[in-house]
Image (cartoon, rainbow, N blue to C red; front, side, top):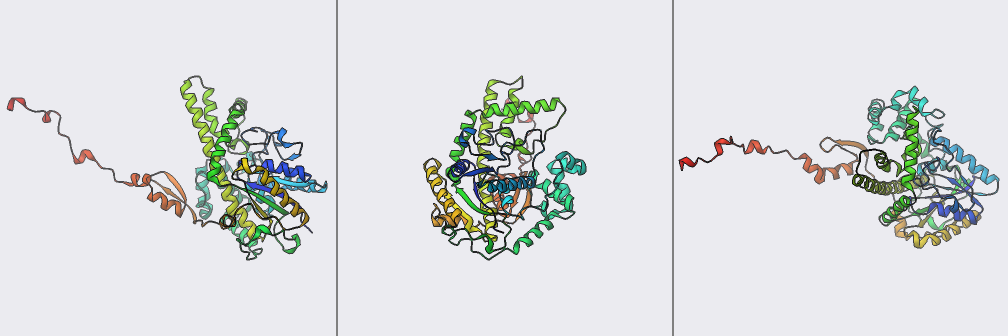
Amino acid sequence: MTRLRLVVIVGTTGVGKSQLAVALAEKYNGEVINGDTLQIYDGLPIATNKLPIAERKSIPHHLLGCIRLEEETWAVGKYVRSATAVIEDVIARGKLPIVVGGTHYYTQSLLFEDSLIQNGPTEGLTAEAQEKRWPILGASPKEMLERLRLVDPEIAARWHPNDMRKIRHSLEVYFTSGKKPSDVYREQQRARSKYLPGHDIVSENTGRGIKDAGQSASPLRFNPLILWIHADLDKLSSRLDERVDQMVDAGLIDEVQSMFGHLQAQKRSGKSVDQSRGVWTAIGFKELLPYVSACAGAEITVRKLEESKKQAIELTKTSTRQYAKRQQRWIRGKLLRALQENDALENLMILDGTELSQRLQNVQEIAGDAVHAFLKGDPLPKSTLLPTLIKDILVPKAKGHIKARYCDMCKITMMTQQEWDAHLRSKKHRKASRIPVDWQALYPRADHEDNLPNHDDR
């Protein structure tokens, strides 16, 4: 059966994905499906960068702000089922579904049938039910990691000690499947290997049309056109900093204060809120929370408040830049690899969104041409990036073997051999590893009185 067609827009934060989705939906009778894990929840519209209603131009947006704060957070499996149902409904009504969002783990799980462990771990159980059944899931990351080391030291060595989501997920896999997570992931890799076509990842994929869905058996759920708005991270950084300043001007701090008030109300009523999940993990909220909490305190000077505010805003900017790096790493290291393994790089169109203020209209025009060709089954237009840059993007960078290493002297964890080697050469480590000199032992001071000059003996 011919797979359903849809358009997927990916890229880092701040490159204009939402605006492009609306422009394409206007032109091609489309509807937008949210693919951002935080925008699913109600609350924090500024922090989560929900597109304002006025800018949606009456285009229907699905799975956006649909989960209330008091409701259970969604697992990725629930998102995939919900998004799939929406896509099928949009197509049944003769419209074009356009998936857009920055949570590429969700997007990739939606596109590929084997991205998730079947039925998902702990599917259908609330967080309270999970922790009641397996109390360790409510423990600290350190305690969970110690338990994971006992059941699967191989997978435990791959996770950073502070990466609570991955550590907990691995334990969920173990509890629900009865298998080591490392064995489960190997089974998934073996299942995917049957789709490997030996396709050259640097072939000239940017000028060819979408392969007919029936030509190969692949785990793709749909026949997608993937539009990647690529941006140079060094040039994007200043734009992201400016956007954080704009968010503050738009009322980000008031938004965080409102959510802080909700937390306080829940606490007074005896209800606990898991701030490690859902909208509470949004960049901007957790960074500004200490400042907002300090504002509620009685004993703090205006000067200290201003310093706290400045630090919180700078931390928000840093976290935003780091998030953009993680997003681009996911696209290059996981999404592109999955497309390669399924001989589906022809479904990818790369757009240059580095200078967004100058290229927004150009990006929308070229993306529109790509969608037009995609719907007609014609060859896609060529990418707006230079061929050499495309090759550099598509060729995965060498990645060292992932294994957590902890430096006792510096109290820091490294995840790859390259990071570990670089740390050993760093000034911080060399300074920490120096043997302290006991200057008092080398140059002992005599008793004070013995050192006084005897003027009578002169």
